[in-house]
Image (cartoon, rainbow, N blue to C red; front, side, top):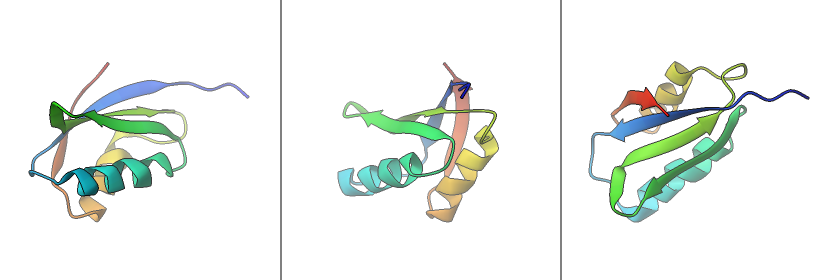
Length: 78
């Protein structure tokens, strides 16, 4: 199976608790096409999402945040 990986940086507009961030990381990691999602303790408002762009589009990642009631913006890929 060929796998294509891309990374996106998502800016979370709200101040979320550690538990809320962990919940989003865990739920995103379970989405088909998402390899991982994580934040750094010093920058909890920035989440790096590693995903397969042939399976899921970056706008679908943002939809997941919106469905969780979180306002977020895609600020770029790495």
